[in-house]
Length: 371
Image (cartoon, rainbow, N blue to C red; front, side, top):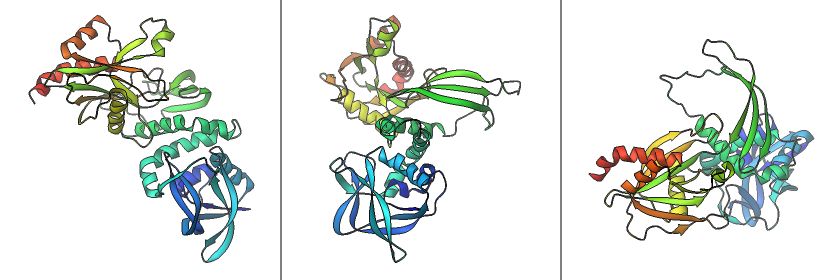
């Protein structure tokens, strides 16, 4: 039987139960001459030697080797390996396995806070852990960990999707309205493709026969259109897009609103502000919600939060931006509102979120210009 000392995210009881495959009942414990920190640039902890300090955590004893293998799968993919160390629990010494990061791979930042992590990342991490552990025995942990970032983004999307939604006209879903026979993931990288076989409740009350459906799995994302109500001008961005090219459209450079996926731990509003800075060099003030919606629910999971940003757009506000290392080459365009609507009318603007936002702005523009 094995004993483990946990000091980081596995101190979150729901996550530990998910990874372990059963509820657990660990006890408080300490590890002398060590301290726990946030990893620099990361949303996870690391433990390092620290003479005179004490790392506080939880001790779990009596684990089977199969349970230990589940823990190793989850942690080992990120190059955290166990060492046997002496810990204290209930006033007694215990030799326990502790996950230490690969030497030199990560650097410590601020002192670790489990409550802060739970608040910001806990729900998304829990949603993702089930997907991660379901791949045990099918894919090496290192391969799964390599795409954990994309998995975590999709996990965060599922957390947001669980929020209550209005159903005053459409069907109010019940827990037994959908039966899932199988789900496979033949492709998973930045995006994923899933094959579902499922049945769903018909409008006559019966359960439909199982059917096959393919789903393109994406993350929740934001769009934001900067608008200067004093100058009555907007800022659009232009960038190369593979989607139109793959369709056979030579016009692969598309006019769009600022846009990007919502990172784990971010709110949609925080993502909109970050993307505006990255793609247009703008620091936003007021954000006005336009709509929240599925652009194409028959095939993709993407869910968009669209905004108008009221801001100052003087001459010279547009430039060329993009995040280094992400192959982004993004050009900004300052133009009058009427010119944008002309581009919508001619079809040169062919981006659905921008068209939707432009039409919203057309309706609300008189009010916004009055101050």
